[in-house]
Image (cartoon, rainbow, N blue to C red; front, side, top):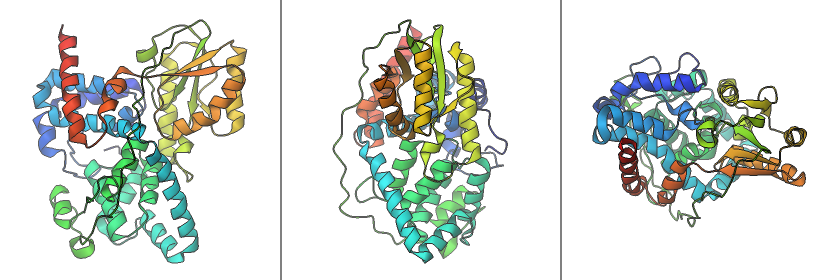
Length: 410
């Protein structure tokens, strides 16, 4: 899908969307589960890296798909776009899953340090040396391209958990470090779902017949896969927390703009004022305690640079790495030097960048500077329905999309 590194710009995302739109209807519905390999004629959009960083907005993609195929004709593709919204809303209302994932990662690393056999098995899996041809090929594809077909991600995770019997959280961490579209909500919750930790009594079992069919015969693991799996028992969902609501905010002469890799189209939310200060912070390394791939870091940094170029105002040179307390102090010092009393940021959902903000916010507040998050209408309208399964969410989302199209047409 991405044999050549994709360009992390808004324009490149729009170009890819335009090229895909003819296939967003029945062609997508028929072929979306087929993975013909990184050089194959896959009929998926490949838009996820731009959507993950909001170099493209969900509503933009959906509007264009409806314009080309109608809501019914493009419904399967639109549902896939909305899965991302659903997972975001689900984690935002249950942020403890992100905390629990970190705990599971740390416990697995401690176990790995004590258990030589487990450490060797993990090293073998991450090196693509398990002897399961399909799995090993996906390891290399992910490392080399920063992408895997969604169906391959499900097979990979199932084999990791149930056949190789490795800690699910370390598999999720491997994805988050290498996927260009590595999203804390979609990635963490999808791995939990495959492992049987998301929906009580259900897990996703990779089967050789399914892999053979949907890879067009490229892979057939035969009897190498463990399919005799019992989902974990006693899984309880934590209580649903409140959905974020739009806070009152206003643009003032002393308002600066802080851009993060979670939302790289701030001008579509906050307008195009002549900002007294525009800053961008890179938080990619917060995605994992391990090493995040250079390909992922470069994509995020290029996206931040593209966002800076689209938002005029006084600025620091290039994105600032926000990793250490001294970096937070540099953001504070720049705000003070520009006379900024508040910095506006598009809403930062639960995940690594929000973790980085927990380091930054006290430093700003101690200097009398307020960071004001601004919630997009799309999230405000859709996240409240992310309480149970996706199709209950979709029953609420579809009428909102219909209403949006009526508004566009009027």
